Image (cartoon, rainbow over the protein chains, first blue to last red):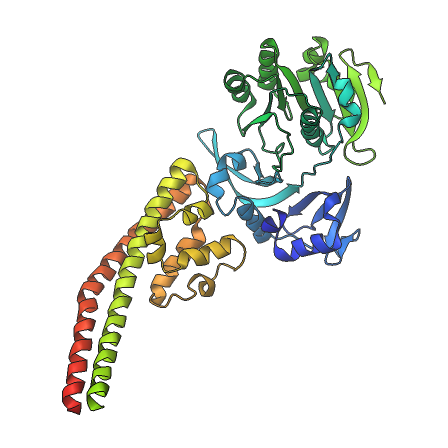
Length: 300
Length: 164
């Protein structure tokens, strides 16, 4: 999919001179050097591959950025306008493009975004078995425990969730898993969610939880990046319905999680029985610890 | 031998007449198909947000036929195999005038570039222009299409008379 999005010359450099399997992010800003994040480290893209010298770095242009966004929408910006309004596009292969530009607002309602000035291409990677080290800690009596995966942005929360869903399937836990994929990042296709997952994509969590529980009667709901009060309400609603929750949230440490106003009550009420904390210390997906509902470390 | 030669000249004249006539017919059908295409775009974009590639791929075969390959040329651009320029877009399309090519090029260049509301307005705007061009091409076809066949027959007969 990346070759369909990027200009041919940029793609050829990344494909031939950089190991694409380790590229996490490609950042393009209008008239600024192109940045790559490889294994958690930032470097510039040059015609010979990567460079630490800003002088040798290739510059992104406004036309280049507009063309990337146009291509990512499969040449149909109108079809992804709802996503663009929220500042991103997700392609079929799960590549997520964060977009910067001018938001057009009318009567307090965002209509669209124009004048694109930057794009951050996040490349998903299916890291098989990355959740295995935590797998046994997240199950009890053959049932999944309510779990929150916590990490700073880009540290592998989504990859962890994706792999955990697949591991459930591979370990023959035939739970009905409902994946609420609000940003379309969890499902990369190629059966990466195993055999027992249903999916609702691009729906707000409040709607997705209610509709999903009514129509698909899941045992487990998996959702990415909770961050608003209505997300917490939706999770409480699902838990009250007897559904187990596997979710993720941005946070740079376990201490700060408990202090965040949004998560404070969630931690105090012990809604989640397990917390998995990931970091980028040794690259994305570094498991810093698994914690119980009292925030006592169980492992690592 | 002479009769065969004269017959051949007659056939060639009729063929030229039909070829010229066909050009007018193809032009008229092309712009009719462009109108249908615009209407289809407007519906698909407004109601199902269908992507351009799928709209083009799911066109009726009769419309595809009348579009004379411009749809395929645009699909090549979508598939990133050719750039979006006039040479690629009008490849193997010889019956269009320069001003018509300009309108069509701008139309295809605007496709997929904006949100639903703007795209829909733009398509309606081009629809009006295509309707005007289509009226002209239908009139041209009525006027010159049959005339060129008749002229081909008359020219053929005239040449036969001259050579006899």
